[in-house]
Length: 553
Ligand code: NOJ
Image (cartoon, protein in one colour):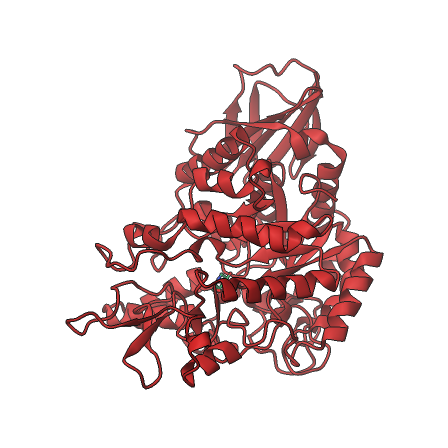
């Protein structure tokens, strides 16, 4: 299994499959779904956190790093999952949330009780002489980034929710304690590690920013040089000592130059990173909590920048449209009402045939959409609820605020997995913790498996192509049509083959002028979701049609 040929599936355990009837998914649910995932053809399953947690941020607020929250199961269940997955040639990737822990964690509780050793696990700072907070930084979930530390006159840093206290990585005891956590899971047979917001672990200068929440502010604590030293140390002390571990770092607001440092093999850091710039192309002036049609030229520019930039110096991208923090890409970039199959397969092809390691987020492979919850009460996510309030406080009307939430909320991807047309989509026999999308009677796994030419079958095909064609797993990348208003195009190439991808990102048919292109060579269609069969110099693509051609050199 190599990063070049593999495809990773992301399961959000809370919403994947419930076997106990408590309305929350669990580890046994993942075990029961292994045959399904094997059939899809994926190589590894990344599971979001299932550790004990008060769930203020759905498990990203961990109160015990080396145990399993009873709501998800037991350590034995995890062992069983690792073994059962292994029998099917599938590795398990766990989520390592090492930037912060829950304020319910023993470390924080001991610190609160006055234990100096543990107080040094956190960033505790006094107010400024004028009584204002230690810095003017903003939490990524809204509001100030500092909270009063118990009854003291100190504040603790929390870049996320107030129940997520940032850990002081400068303290070697903190680093060693975290490395022990990583080794604990590796020793149990885990084959992959996903590191949550790893590039913000290196806070160095605690100074005010020019503007709270600005890019300039994020730069103060993001990708600082010491992060690379610590990532190298993390590797040496943990996964570097084990065979064949796949690692991915989640990088908040990073750059190509930093991405190369994190992933170029000679730097001994990580296999690949998630970067998010391509998923901000529908943010008005960088503000997520706004609505606007996505900027297609900007989308292509960013993908090109990362594809070309990373390959130039041996960097490696994680390829994805969806995850548990994003609205569903098909609802966002396509037309799930009129062209559900075309949208889903076009987006999948465009991303899977790029250079990097593709990730499939649960339900993507059957075309699950945003659930379009009709009231604010249906939403559960902390970031969503905070920002709904912030919108109202700014004077945005309730209906407009709800429309923004419907488009942008993280709950869009967290609605329960749709397994069947039965009650609660077959996700649970109880009351689901988050409502199932209304369209489950037509969009569900049972239905998808019954269709020979559906979205699921198409994903199977795409995943296999990466294994069969070195030009996909290892070829170079070059963009075409960067200025075209509706077509994405690129060329992949190695010593033996050339691959051409053309995708129509819009709902109108479009003619592609390929007269400058060598269409007379022996191209053959490799995969596609529409009528085009042959490469001609005036190719017509149907709405959301995608096609890839390949030729021997
Ligand atoms: C990124 C995770 O993907 C997100 O779900 C979480 O809220 C933050 N990190 C904080 O851990």
